[in-house]
Every structure is written in C-alpha cells, then in structure tokens.
Length: 440
Image 1 (cartoon, rainbow, N blue to C red):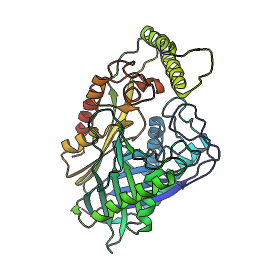
Image 2: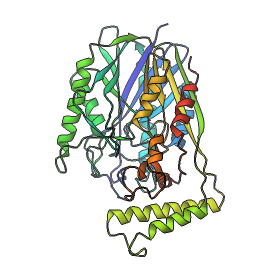
Image 3: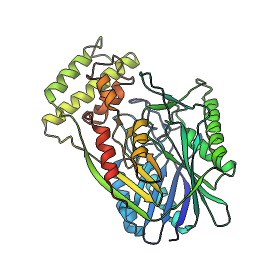
C-alpha cells in the first residue's frame, strides 16, 4: 500500500500587546515584539483509504473547545475523518494564548485566536497539496549531555534519556520532514514580554539550517515534571537557548544514520471523550480551606506585598469561587479527549494537559506497536497529572508551605482553572483508556 506524506509550515502572527501565557497569575505580559516567530506545522499521512493529520502550533496550550470546533470544521471542509485530526501544542511559555491555562495566566486574545485558526487551515491545505510517496526511518538518539532537570523533591532525578525521531525521505533521498519527540518544558527565557517558540523553535531552526530536513516537526512529550537546565541567569538567558538547542540537535544529528525503516500503513485514528476521576467539591470544606489560607496573610484587606502573599490570595480566591459555583449547582465533571493515531509501525498517543515523564514511558512500554510516541498538551488542557507517589507525598493542601512550589502546584492547583482535584488513580485511568482505543 503506497503512503503519501505532506508537510507544511506557516508563521502565526501575534498582535502587538497581546498577553503572553505562563509563569504566574496576572503578570500582564503584553507582547512588545517577536524574538522568534511562532509556527503552525501540519503533517498529513495518507494511505488512500484514510488520512491522519497532526497539527502542531507553538502555543502554551490549546482549548479543548477550540480544538473540537476546528476539528469539525476541518473534517467537513477537507473530507477527513475527525478522529484522524490531532492538535498538539509545543508548550512554549512565550506565546499568546488560544485559551488561558489557568485563571489570570494569560487571557486569550481574539485576534490571535483568529490568526491561529486561519493559519492552521492554510497550512493544512498546503500540506495536503504536497503529499508525495516517502520512505520512513525511525530511531532513538541518546541525550549525551543532560538538558533537563527533574522538578521534584524526591531522590529520583531521572529525565528523558533520548530523542525519538522519524525521518521521511522522498524518492530522491531528500528528507521531507524530520519528526522529533522529547519531554522537556519550554521555559528558557522566563517571563519576558517577547514572543518566542523557545528551545523547541530554535531546534527546528537549526534542523533546517543544517539541512537535516526541509521541515523540523517537534512533538512535545510528557514533560510535566521536567524543566530545562538554566546555566545562565537574566539577562544572559540567550546563552541558555543556544547551548540547549545546539546540544539537542547535535545529539539528534549523530543518530540519524542509525534508523530502522518502518511502515506507515495502515493509517487509522481513534478519538474518545473520557470522564476523568475527580474528588467531590464540598463548598463548606472549600470555604474552610480558603479561610485558613487567607489567615496566613498579615492583612487580607491590603494588596499582597510579595509573591508568597500573591499566591495565597490567588488560591483563596479560586477556592472561594469554586465553593460559590458548587452552591449554585455547577457540575465539575472533567471530560477530555484522548486520541491515538496509527500509521503502520508508528503510533502517536495524545494526552491533554501535563502528564509526568513516567506517563509517557508507561505508554511506550505498554503499546503493542513497533514505534510508539507519547505527546501531551494535546487537544486541550487539564492541568497536571501527577503520579500516585505525589498524591501520597502531599495528602493535604497544607502539605507544602509554599503555594507556588512543586507538590502543591501539581497535586492541588486544580482550582486555578476551577477544576476539582484528581483522584490518585488518574494516570492509570488515562493510560488504560488511551491504550484501549482501537487503531488495529
């Protein structure tokens, strides 16, 4: 069965003064200019019977509602099975938002949202128009110099040890697209007011400059607990970007001749909205916790005087809002889309939100396919999915004194998006449901 692959990329324009998402509540990071552009990239894989479409955008996340709406529109307009359309964000923290990941963490800009939709549609059209036969090779490039840091208080400092890659060659031997998948946050620059695709965008740029492929196509792994290593502080963070992306692409390039040929047919996709297990929202309990939190502030009627007080106010306000919503009968059910795409030996498993590194490793270990890849911040957001050990380590909201630190933020910060706390079995629930999706 002959398989054709298309790929295209276009810059997503960011309006001046659009708010950039990430790093904290109500920072007001209004875009003052573009350090490096944000891209929409689209990959299509067509076996004549089915077409899978992977849409990657340089954004911190995407709204599940926006993804669902656009999926329906694209499926209708281009005659594609909607279950074969996947949205993945690269999770750069220096981009305008399609939807705010948490209250106050970067309000969506309507002009940017329109640009996001329009650029995706244009890029999909171009990718479909340049579909052509390819041969695919896949491999795993070892990370030779550590790039990531485990954001954890445990003894385990394990980070993603490899770059999973697939290169697709035209009949003339040229590389049409190089897919690369790694689990590490895009937070090189910190909360500066300039648009950037972060280290992931710089790696894609270096891939093109070195002529490793016509298009570098990054798929963000399960990196909820992995940050980049910062070796230079402000104002020298440009040096971080250079050494991280340089080392990453060096490692990737060194392994590209070691790949094994894989098949890309048959092409199938499966998508299912799944209800996630959450704890009940008790308005009396939430009000009591909110009162205990605000009691830590010297004067709850004064403006916060430091970052610690700011986070206390923020947590108090969100808990109180959830209590009010619960009293008015809000259904706090969390339902998100899980998706699996199969292209022959290649399988892509997509999870919304930010699962920990261990989730991707578990998915790959349990997948029946020859070359599985796990991606996150896909088809929307849902916060963090911590491991059962994290739930045990932080059993109450007061287990961590720092309300912006590891532990509290991952396990207890659901109220930041008016979401209840997940139950400790959340990871197994997601992984088992994901693996049940039928793409055979």
